[in-house]
Image (cartoon, rainbow, N blue to C red):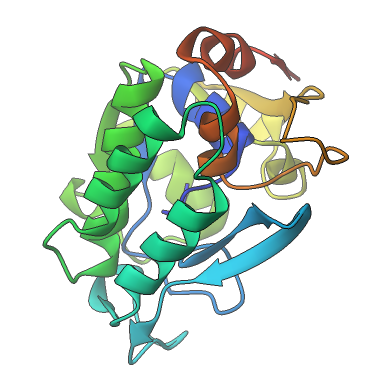
Length: 224
């Protein structure tokens, strides 16, 4: 999976469901995606926050891009927004620590955030960066994934539900691999006193839920 900034609960369900999770940091950056932006709850509505980048371009790889200068602004927004959330005392220091991590490279910054949040959520999955895998960089899409699976000597590959349009179970079977897609079940929780706003950043989920509840949410999915 590509590295996303504080992704939603479904991303973490995927991380939790596998033994090894590959962060695809040497793919082209995609504008208007979730690599450097996400949503939190502000005044009862989804509010997008975006991390500034230097020289971001779809012609550059994710690990060739540096972070801009608005980290402190994002930290302040999160602090004010969730100051009265039930688990703010536990979660905000972690988010602040992640945001102030002394790394300007976008890929390494997000890789660290994934490792830190995985630890908070009790996820023991091994995190691997795609740039550390000796693979064929000429391969794309399904062929690229098959090559990575071969390099890691895996027998099963799990992707997000959107991968159904990209990958074939029959082709994976021909290569001796099982292929599954993870589908997130309904995940709902109390957010202050407003109507529930779904699919927000994991920041929101952690702010309103105990570690026990978070552990339960990580298992609310089906493999198809």
